[in-house]
Amino acid sequence: MKNSILLLLLIGFSFKGFTQILSSIADTQALINVIPFPQASATMIVSFNAKMLDITTMPAASVKRQPLDELLKRYEKDKTDINLLCDIYYAHKGKNDPQSGMSYLQMAFNKAVELYELNPSNLEHLEQMTDILIEVKRMPDVPGLWSSYTERNPEVAMGWAKLAVYQVQMMDTLGSKNSIEKAFTLDPELPEIYVAALLEVIYKMIIQMQTLGENAIIKADLSFFEKVLAQKPNSEIAKLSYNAAKLFELFYGVMIANVDKFGMDKSFKMDLTERQKTEWAELEKAFKTQLTNSKIVNKYMMLKSLLVLEVIRGEPDMAVAYLEESKKYIESDVDLYKILSFGFIPLKKYQKAIPYLKTATDLSSNFDDFFALARLYFENHEYSMSMDILEMLLQSFPKKTDIVMGMISIKMREGKFQEACSTLFRLQELYQDEMNFEDEDPYFPFYKAICTLVYSKNKAEAQKTLQAVIDKDLPWSEEAKELMKRFF
Image (tube, rainbow, N blue to C red; front, side):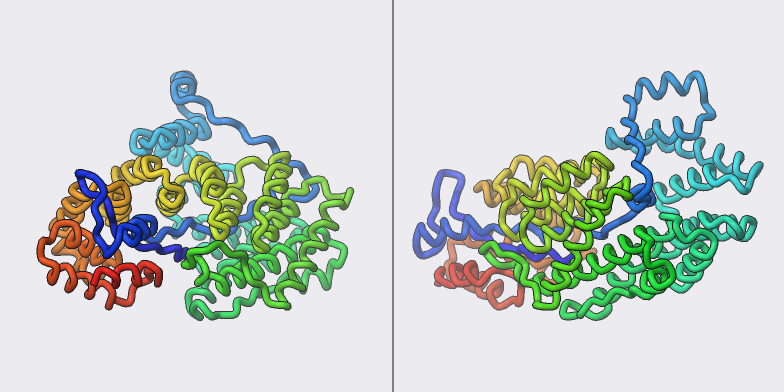
C-alpha cells in the first residue's frame, strides 16, 4: 500500500521565542503546522489461517504467554519440551532481546529435527521446524521440507495444502497450483486448501500492482473457486472463500484508485465506481447471509470481511462493532487492527487510528508498522510518543536514515532548531560516502532550506536555497510551496 500523506515544513520558533521567517507571522505559523514526516507504510497484506476458515469448529482460546522467570523454572525441570523452548525465546523477544533467547530456539529446532527424523510422517514436528525456520528468516528452506514430506506421504491432503501455502509465499504460483489441486482431490473441505488458494489470489494481485503500476485495474484469479463451486455448489467454505477473494480484489482496486488522495490536506472517503458499488452491495449481502447461517459455527471470516467492507466505504466507526464481535472467535488477528487503523487515516482521525495500530504492534512487531505508528503520533501532535518509538527503532536499525529524518522533523516542529540542524548535518557527514542526501533523500534539501532560513544572515543565500527546493519535483503540498514562495 502506498501511503502518501506527505506534508511540508517551515519553522517559526527560535531558541529565544517566536521568530518570523516568512513575510508575516501568519505565513510562518501556517508552515509550522505542515511539517513533514518521512513516508511511512504499514504492511497491509491480508493473511488467513485454518482456524479462520474452519467454519465448522470454534477456534481454541489463545493461550497467554507465561512470564520469562516462570518459563525458566519449568525449563530446569524439563529441557526437552520443544514448545517450552520456543516460549522462552518469544519471552526474550517480547522484552526486545531476541538474541538472549536464540540458544533456546536453536535447542528447540535441534530437538524437532531429531524427533522428526525418527518419524518422518509426524506433522507436529515438521510444523515446529517450519515455524522456527520462518522466525529466523529461512523461509526459502521451508518448501523443500514440505515437498519431502509429500513425497513420503502423498495421500495426506494436509501435506499438499501446507506445501502450497509456502510455495505461494516464495512466489512459486505454478507449484502452488499443482499442490492445491492434489490436496483438493484428497480432501475438498480441508480449510488449509482455501488458505493456500486465497493467499495465491492475493500474491498474484500484489504482483499485478508491482508490475502494472498505480493505474492498474486489479483482477483476481477466481478460477479455482469457480471450479470448486461448479462441483460443490452447496459448500459453505467454498462460497466463503470465493467471496473473500472477490472482497480483496475490491479492496486493492479501491486503494489503488484512491491512493493519490492521501496527499490531500482535507479528509475524504474512498470513491467507488458504479461497478465497485454493485460488488460492495453483493458482498455485504453474501457475508451477512452466511453470518446468520445456523449451520456455520465459526463466523469469524464473515465478521472480518464485513469489517473490511466498512473500511472501504469510509465508515470505520461501523467496523468497530465487527471487531468486537470477532473477539469471541479470535482475539489476535493483526490484520483487523491494522485495517481498522488504516480506515481512520483518510478521515484524519489519527487519535482513533493510533490505538488500533498500537495493538497491532503489540501483537506482532515489525519495522514498518512501528514507523507508521510513529507517523500517526506525529500527525496527532503527540511528539514525545513519536520520538520514543523512533529512539527504540534506532537501537535496532541504526543505519535507517528515515528514523533520523523523523527525529529531525519532530525537533523542528518543537522549535529545537539547533538540535535539528546539527543532527541533519551530522547525518550527512556520517553517510556522505554511502548516500548523496541532496539528490537521494526528498526531505534533506527541505530541512537544509529551513536551517538556512533560520541561521543565514544573507537573504540572497536563503533565497537561492529556497528556490532550489521549490524547483525540485517533490511530493510536498501546494499550500506549503506557495507559503515558501512568499519569502521572496
